[in-house]
Length: 96
Length: 428
Image (cartoon, rainbow over all chains, first blue to last red; front, side, top):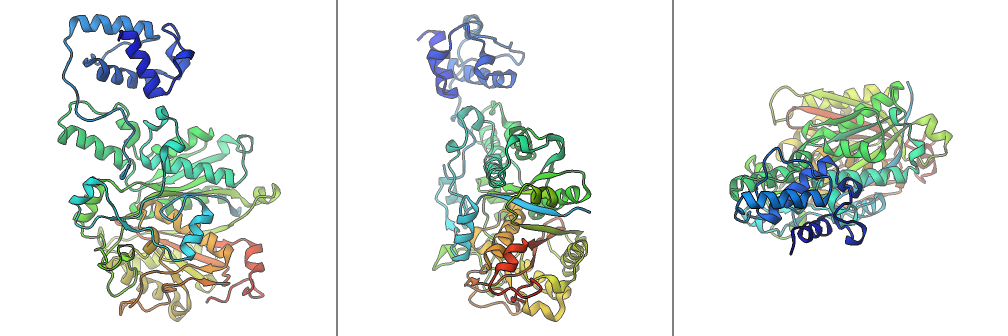
């Protein structure tokens, strides 16, 4: 899978967005991912690409920007090991 | 001073997720207490709890849900119900004249617990990005203000088991004075996580399991009571200036007429008769009525050995000989102790039971304790008993005791078959 395909899958899986309604140049804010949402998207990117993003990671206005950023980072940084547990799910309810 | 009406009710509770189900189950004496079966429950000495039948994904989109601890989920769903029940649309709420007042004891404890597990047990150096947002104690109130676009006071009260009684009382004060026209007030709690339950277990306050029937493990005022059972959920009421509510033809559940609060300074956990009695007296004084006006009480009635004996003595101190003729309901035997949300749930039960003309039962009370000798409406509801006013008591660790006085809406008291000419019922 390409970086764009993996990012597209993140938006489909975690935000339940239809791939038909966005493209690589669609502003993410238009999809409901504002500055706070970007914090979470960066978290998902770390999980998916096994990357450790710097604490001053930039805001990524579009998926195309994210692709460029991730590809550049991957070229510099080897992937980290998988993280324990699924941290992307909502807070688990007591009996869920 | 203005009068304050309750015009909307919303609940997420172990006894049902709407007012009708809650009242039906409580009237029938059904207990929601059960032995819980989550894997971590094996590490509890007594894995009892009263959970709500609640599916978050039915109420929230995934992206929103990741920002909500169960306590905020419960609060938002109950608030939506209350506002819908009050038949208020967005245009009916004047944003700066509407406030949100929420009580919660433990806030986002499920998220906090998971954060600790991630860091300490899973040894991860990463934690959920929204851990602060889900864990912060005032998140339920914040989300309610945002969802309903109200810009008046947005306040959270955390006074342990009296949190939502305080929240409703403080909202009442602002409506009464004319500072606000509408308040969304109540409480929410989600304490059924491993860490929270272990902490309560360590304090030796939780009930032992009844060997014959786990659902009967919480036994307020009984000789064999052993403690409380934790429950989860939210209860929200829509408080509204009485004149405004009447003018728009709102369905009025009842009137909030009094609120009293006291500080019990003798001990951090052990309540005193004087402290509890002081809160009851303060509530009666603010309602401008005497003890003779109270037809029934929804007791704090946790099922702990200390509270129930002290509460019985405090009721006697306030009501004198008449204490023996006042029906007292301890509904925590059925829905468990919702901690910071319990006071709001108790107030809702007072309003619904006055309207329906039913005195709710104190279940699992086969043999009252020697020092618990009042009329606790043991084991069976009493129907066709219409009372005019009820006291709803919440007593708390830390000593913040709070009591509300609620009066039945005129039509329900007057229409009851047992109502007297004065509108006061026959129960007391």
